[in-house]
Image 1: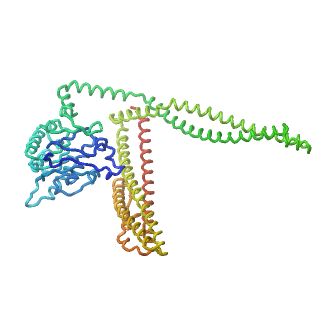
Image 2: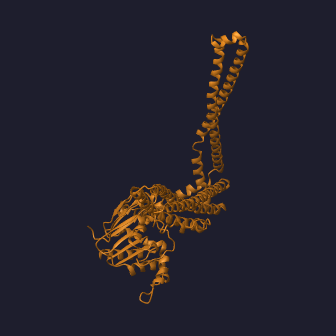
Image 3: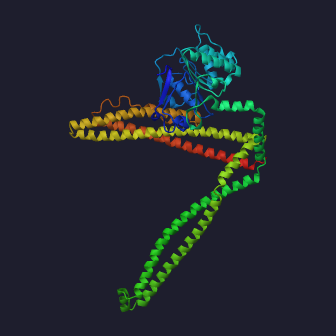
Length: 559
């Protein structure tokens, strides 16, 4: 057993909602347990690989404030941390740390501000805002780092010069030698060169050990420093060539592809309509074929030696009847032939459309690639449309955030609605046993009734948790989406709490009252869900409209 303060972690994925974004991060979603082996551990990887998300969860699960600081810091400027920390269990060592600090570059300003608020005569402010960003970062290391401490740093090199990074390296190494533990996210080739540190890479969708010389920070920095001119020439020439190719891309080609995409959509609509027509005609043809065969059978029966033919001959109506049946058979055959001709014509049109669609099968991907390149060209140019495209992309990004929040709220509401239905089913069963009790069901009916009521109580307790989460998600929708959703205007969550409701179930009427209240709750949830779904649909329309405007702008802009 090692003597580290944080020896490892375990993630219970059952406590992470299915739609939560952390499940979409391959490196994180692929782990259930993780073990630390050395006093200094580095997390490395490309932006978005999940290293900071895991580091944040470790810090919060260990007891630090999500925005940083010591364990005594308790504030929230913006609640953005994932629920991964709630599903994480930290394996702690036998030693207790004397010190600790969670430093993250992105929220350091907020921590420095709160440090002033937390100061008093016995603990005067360090005045981090009076120092430069780099000086403040280094001061944190000097003020709070010591032996027997736990330190979790997210990109501590962000504000430091190379020389100051070396100073930080020395301090970290010294403290680790004296019993401290560090878990650090870093892109710095200087800090990553720390002696006897363990490095884990988050690239390629897995968390795996990595040698210093294999990190991108080291490889790219070394390549650049040792071959600067060659590196720049190759990089910038490729960029220039790419830009020139993009700038000189034929606008007529882009417009042609745009027309092909429009044609494909038209063909797809025609194909859908023709397929429906074919199915209808095929059904009709089967009926007409049966009718044709039946009418011809009537003619054949009269022309043959049937009893019907003998009868009509006897009464002298043979010619009249035969003419009538022949007319009906002819009419049936004409209808069948006409329908068959229509079906053949539809099949021919459908085949033509399908052949055209086959030729247009790749036009959308070609168009999107060309459009993407055109947009890039506009953005790097001085064209007036560049600003419009940038603003459009910002609006689309904001709308996607709104959609994500709405989907999270919808899923939370669906979960609560499912539990509500379970409660109602349980109460219905209890109602049945209570009725039986009233009719003299005796002890067994009492036991069965109260067992159902116990289940209802447990379900309602779970429902309260889910409704609380639903309300939380709705708050996110209200704040983030800015869709003017005021929860209290349509949903009184105080009504959802069933304090004392199940204290006495001796009377059937109590169950009926409970059912009514739960049904009321169900109705409120369904109304909210309907509103959220409409809001999501509206956001989808806005995103589609914005993309269409951006697309039209790109197609019409000539560089």
